[in-house]
Image (cartoon, rainbow, N blue to C red; front, top):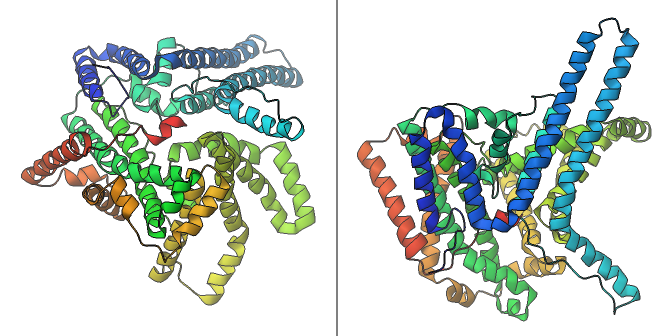
Length: 538
């Protein structure tokens, strides 16, 4: 029998989790956090032991970079206290010199993080582009591609590490002196594969504080986990069969056999599948953490209720969006370069010119967002597509405001809200087609195919899934819709708080029904393949 530990969707994970939780709660309070580093390293090694070197490199590099920066800050304070006779200019010069040293070390740390990410994730992409240029002059020669594996979770733990050393540089908090605590922060197993991207200042007290067992919080975590498995194993993995077939078929003649209706359904299924796959992972990760009484940040806030693209991205993959905002957009916007650019822009374009720094920052952010998702020009175009929409809305905001003022149209008008919602879904649909397509030519063909209203055959859909599997997935998606609607109407109160107020008989009946539904249609009964979580590849 082959042992294959694939993370949350592996049957072996159940044994790993039960053992980890038991050990965690029987160990004395002050030693519990030690078990987290052990569990996390075992978890990571079981999934991808070949990636451990890269994780260890990140832990060691950023621990010492942050310690140097933090020690330098302390050194400045000590030196100034020991030399009270220094005049103002001398103090200023000394501070400037030490700040320059800290900044140099920070830059080296960022380069050290990004360099590994670039080599492992983007080097082949660069080589491929260089080979395309070489082929114009010498078709016989090409640079060989590397065959290295992509380290598990590298995009996530690299961004987490960068935020840590930057926060220490900004003096938000001192560097963690305890190496094992820092290693625990970097490797904590529920978030290591695909987030959320956590900040040390937000999570340290959660990881290392002494805990007392809380039955309600523990059971809430178990319920959240089960809800995540419902999303992933019943809904996402079922629909992924047809979504994968539809989009991979765009590269081969078989794509022509897909009807327009099937293509439209495939794109609609992808909306559901992607949301349930990614948010399902987050529900499991947050649920596991709640069982350990560790609070992780939410990464989704019902994104399909958004009525604008910028609002959608404030609700989807929240920790990635806030990371780019805090560590790319804001620093660039207030940089000397942006200030000069804004002043020059105002002279040339008037008040519109003041928007140039914001636009420049958004272009960079969305270029990097696309590139973060994958080493492909379609990902870059996908990112810039959303950046262009948001930039357009910013530039047109004064026009829209004037229009609403002049026409006295209420922005909360139901018809207008429905229109804006449909418009947002349409724009997201185009984005998702680009995201899943290998080339822009494929994306265009899929888009055109969707609106071939003369083609209604569902033979490919039936062959790949079958109607029973489709009905099962859609029935499994009903609780997701219901929970999101309830939560959207009252976002300040967590759904589980409402759920726990139900009569105990109804509450337990629903929990047992959900577990049986997952066991039968998700793990045992579907007869369909199971897929890795989609964002693991990033």
